Image (cartoon, rainbow, N blue to C red):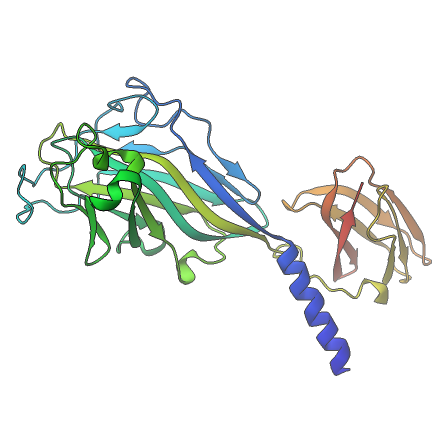
Length: 325
């Protein structure tokens, strides 16, 4: 009995790992122009298990200051040129860049990290931070900074207490030395903890910026990547029972031609549904009484993982089906 339960546990773990998909959502801002408005017109990113909208600038200027990157003016002021110790501004909850990641039906999503290049004009912002809706934008996400290429010997950004990015070298900017270029300043946010693990509700990520030296100062982001894992969840299907044979016999499984047989071992009428990984019913068939056998031709379906959901009275049994071609 113990051996049987252990085998069932191993099977369940295997099913979960097979359905976990790593993803990387890359935002290049390639279609942004100085007249494209506050929303990135570049096609929105999508990956298995997760969809996103486009990055938007909220509470800032109406257009990017240049093409093929995200750079806006209108940030709160509070800094003075060449002064690195005195700042009068603070984070403004009404000014930020924002994107939303939405888990697809049947999936839960874990966020790992986000990386992006950052830069500013000569009178641009001096502080910025990443926050999310998972704590109502209350705390900054853990921040990282990696100077790249020629920036390695000239670090222009530091991480202050509370995970705030601080542009401390006021000389370096987009138009300044190479150390200030967006390509050399790799900023990051590391997502960890229950707020970012196996979530089925949307993630809203914001990058706040403040303490600009002038209202016309800019904050630029580019080459942004969000990494995570999307895991198919059987919530909504009921638990995968792995005991289909107690009431039904499913064969062959896997099937390489899409034809499967389901033999009922129950005298009652019922129904069979084939569900894809997005939770959509893609095939349905009735089960007659008298221990009937149902033939399902699923050859029109693409190769992949599906779920067979059998209903007899108040009982629902779910089993995984693999279609290979």
